[in-house]
Image (cartoon, rainbow, N blue to C red):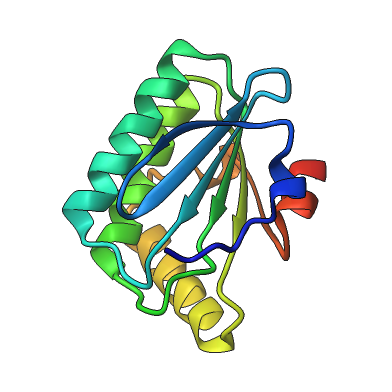
Length: 147
């Protein structure tokens, strides 16, 4: 497994669950959930399963911020991003999660693919909720927690 998060960055968080492709931490006082992907590619069904579990945590908690650490990824899968962006984020917004912080892999091509895919999603789904979300890209977990 890929260890990208330093223990000092998440010392105030507790592990909610860990599976083959994702590790998830929560901090109820900070109203924050962190999801760290653990592999270079996550099959869509495994991704949906992990995010279904995260959704269950959100539904019973009082969370406002979701930090998504994608640094381990080396492959980009458009249908997964589309599901996450259009369906999962919309459902989580209904439960109060409107702050999203993302940490991307260092490769510039990945960032470019994210932007291209995001633009395509916004054109395909005109009823998107992006204007209701606070989405920012960060370089570290510490930065994502702080802003």
